[in-house]
Length: 311
Image (cartoon, rainbow, N blue to C red; front, side, top):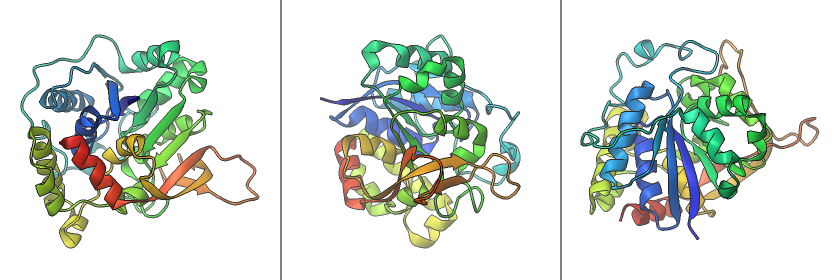
């Protein structure tokens, strides 16, 4: 049976590829998408999401969610300052304009209603953006933590971050939300940090292999954009494509070749470490493990998943 999941995302280029893969892979069923402020403002996230779904030919409901972080008025560094010289994320993603529209109702309320429904007891929640929507849903309905059977999160870094030396963007963008979600007591939490995504980067040759279909060609274009605009990718000729790895894990449980069970938390106050993912593996720690943290992924398994999903 296909793995059913809801995607909570801040659709930039890699979220769009996660959408294409979630729609296209025969072992997966994308039930709904909720959008959140992150890579771009939430109204552009929603537009990007609709464009990706329309290109994939998928009639999947989209619900727009939070337009700002949980407690902060904006990102820790305002987007207009953070991205003033960056063309890394594009409005519209170069995809055709959307014909579909978002559904009525707020994404946070949808998450509550969806996961409180007994019919969705098998539903996985995949989060590839800041965790604002999920934190708000947990605050709105405290029983929700016991109703989400599995949460797969793209976020954090056990080693170096990307937006700062300590922090990855998603957790940095709303650290209070990340801490609230990871400490909520959800039964199974799998974190896919930069360590895992950087261990299986994609190349121009991979782009060529994906191009046989419309979504494959769009995926190749989005990856090439990352290869051209990411400074590290320009040096290595390979780019990590983070968010689809969460979706790949649903269909390929063998994807991660190294992981650790640990107590995880997120720094919410540090002047230099805001948004840092703390992975405590000490055997004498006082808190029990609350997540599995992936550290390395199989590039072979990742490419096989994407080729099958985009075919």
